[in-house]
Image (cartoon, rainbow, N blue to C red; front, top):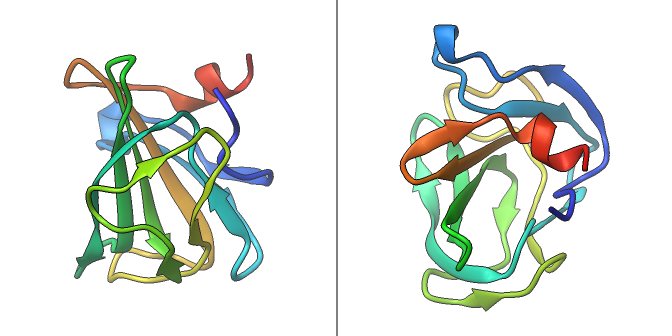
Length: 119
């Protein structure tokens, strides 16, 4: 997979704590990129996780990018691998500073993104 950003992981994937993501510390407005090509199935604001982009990929993966300062895509858009989809921020009630909360799902099961991004 294409890395969505380059930065330090500050919180690891931990299903026991229901943290189905890796959190990556970033500078504000760092471009966030799609890990694979696909269709944007959600690009909007939520109270808890702020600006969110969710992409469905043809490989059966779904990727989610949360707490963005702003999004640069809309629901229904087709995006390419490495395309900028958002800018890093600290939005939503659950945010703990500027970072990307990045989730990767396959077949309804959360995957540890760190393992996929290291390849």
